[in-house]
Amino acid sequence: MAAYFKLHYPLISVSIFLSFIIVAHIFSSPEYSFVKNTISDLGAQGYSKKLIMQTGFLLFGIILSSGILLNGVNFNNALILIYGSCVALTGIFCTKPFVHPETTNFSQLHSNLHSAFAQIAGIAFSIGILLQWYLEKIPDIKWKHLLFFALIISCSLAFGLIKNYQGVAQRILYLISFWWLARYYAVN
Image 1 (spheres, rainbow, N blue to C red):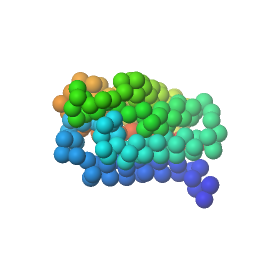
Image 2: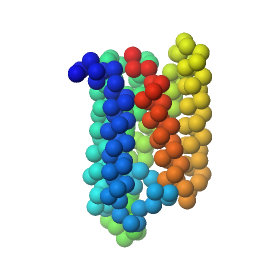
Image 3: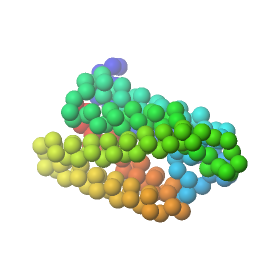
Image 4: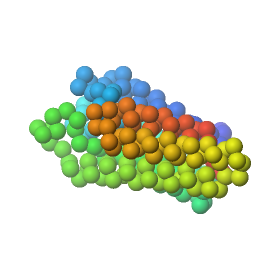
C-alpha cells in the first residue's frame, strides 16, 4: 500500500481534491456562481458550507506534500512541495466572504494570508513545471511541460483580467494544472 501511494500520490491527491470541489458545488448556495466565483469562495469566511472546501484544500495539500516527503525532497520536487503546503494553508486561512462582504464580520488577515498562500502556490507550481521541463531528457515529454506551462500562465492572466468570468478561468486553470500533475509530474 505504501509503495502504491509513493508512486501515485499526485493522482490520489488530485482525485480527492476534485471530489471535494464537486461536492462543494453540489451543496453550494444559490448566491454562488460557477462562472464568477472562485473555488476559494466555496471555503470563504462566513459561508455556512465552507468546511467542505476547506477539507478539500487541506487533504490535497497534505496528500501531495506527504507523497513528496515519503519519496524524499530534492531539487526536482521542492517547488511542488511548496505548492502542496501552500494549498493546504489556503484551507486553514479562508478568503473573504463572497456574499455581503460589507456586512459580514470577517478577518482581513485570514483573507490576506489565503491570497498570499494561493499566489505562492501558483508561482511555485509554475516554476516547478519549468524546472521539470529543464530537467526532462525525453523530447516528447519536454515540450509537453512547456505547453502546460504556457497554458497555465495564459489561464492565470485570464483569471486576473476577466473579473466577471474568474470562476470559469480558474476552473480551466485547475483542470490544466491537475492534468499535468497527475500525468506528467515526475514523481521521483
